[in-house]
Length: 401
Image 1 (spheres, rainbow, N blue to C red):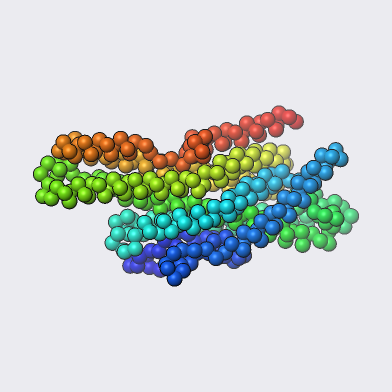
Image 2: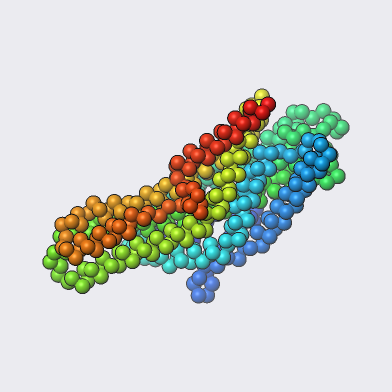
């Protein structure tokens, strides 16, 4: 599509990663029905993914409790298990919120400009190009990180192979954990176990990338509307209120801007309701997973082993950082309306204009923020808190040696 000469459709912001399409792991396939409403026809992917999750977590929980009962070490890879929980949380919450997500997409679709002049006024082409570049960077990182993470155990297995009676170590397995009949220790079945692990990994990763695509797209569109409204406020001239050519029309325009502000705030609240539980739970699990990965890297002497755990660690830190950054950006865009109102010289207007503006300024001071039930505000300070929590857990584990 030529983004310069043709309007951009809102569906372009919700395109998922190529590898999800290749492996048929698209949790949402958007299309328009006869009424023009966007609907989803891909719920089967959720059920197949959850079936694998139930099996994966079921057998591993059995191994944990059985090992505790027997008083022996389990065969679990704790960093992998923790990051699997991190992915599963986002997948489960995507499924439980799937109808609300579709409804919200249709609400955003009604707000999305259809004609090219309006899109240019809201800077849609530039915003979409930035969004597209970011998607490409995420895809490139996924290919490199997933490829390296998948190949590393095979390299360890080949280098350490002695004979068919030698045990297959945890480092030589992709995900580790427990499977019936001691399958993970049968050398002839190693390729099939590896394929099983790869598919389980892809199921978890696609939960994450689906969540990431939706979260970033919604946040980008909300910021677009907030920044567009800010530019309209900055163009207001308070002096025009002294002797307007058509006073009724002048204040009707001001009223439309106030209503637009209220509508965008409602959209921000709906956005927060969609993702607050997922962010709250996955941030706590993410800090634990970062801790486990750091611990294993600090204990590893093999550079290849360090590189294996470095990829997931970097991904968790980077995406946690961006989630918090996006929260800060949304807060700044909302606060920018208050700044634009206060700085546009409202005090030079008529008495009626000043009264309206004072009420609006007071309303705009209630900025919209991405929060998790009011317990935390998702911004850069929250990112600092998560990293500090991960480091405290890491130092606790090191002190227990």
